[in-house]
Image (cartoon, rainbow, N blue to C red):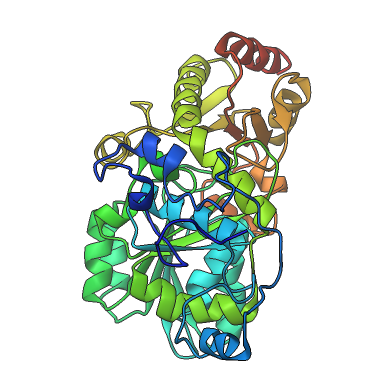
Length: 411
């Protein structure tokens, strides 16, 4: 069995070797792009579960390790199945290069740790996922990194924070779980003047709805566990950026610290990319329909979704995103008791801290994903006792509406 029947290099990229037109649409690239076929000409991508590779001679092994000859050496470094996922996601994102990781948090941590050292300054949006907040606010300062948090929606706060040089800016938009939006073009411009590299967690928007690199960001990270898999099957993450950043800055860190994605998970994520556009379209349609149904219902203080005209940053969402995404937030007037009553009455929507799944999932952030935050920190991020995060799935919308009505009746 040969590594490839084509004359392309060992590390092929894109879809040119497969005869895809250069202007092929995103959906076509997600089905065909970056496929590396073995000598058996399989239609579905092969799963290379091996850890190592063999050499024809001692000289060949030497050339592989000294960089004279580019080839697969060890699956902690590179693997054909993992590389197909990386290259296909890079095609979708419009990035020069991508490296996959074992989880979304490995991607976030890798994108930061590979470029920060003691004495460097990190400026981060305050509204971050709980583990991201811990890395920025607890772990990195122990290593001598100075972290400053700002209100991500306040451009004046960004301008003040970035009046001082910084090494990295970290943000997520829309934020988890409060769906705050950050003006990417404006913040990226301020960050670059301060000398900072901008890292954007784009998981809520997915590669289909928002393109941070086109808006000025330098690095994009994903939890591929969410929409890219989309069916609750496996963990995975990805870091995307320029070839220089991925290969020279991030690559050595990942190579030597080993947050490696499983080849089987990479294959699963590859298959997820084939249907991502279709699923995200249905996610968005269901989410906005459910948000509109819930808005103004008795006991509901507010509903947050970027496509609702009532969202405080609706105009920015229309400018920056092509769709509002699959997640909405519901704030119940009755606090935690009302939120729990609603959750416990649901039959179709499941209680889970995951999101981006084919199944609709709901959680109570104050007691789960963001429970480690202090009461003050929760208040600043708008995570009150009555707030629920609802990741809307692919079910029939009539069944979802009936289910949330069942929850409302329990109030």
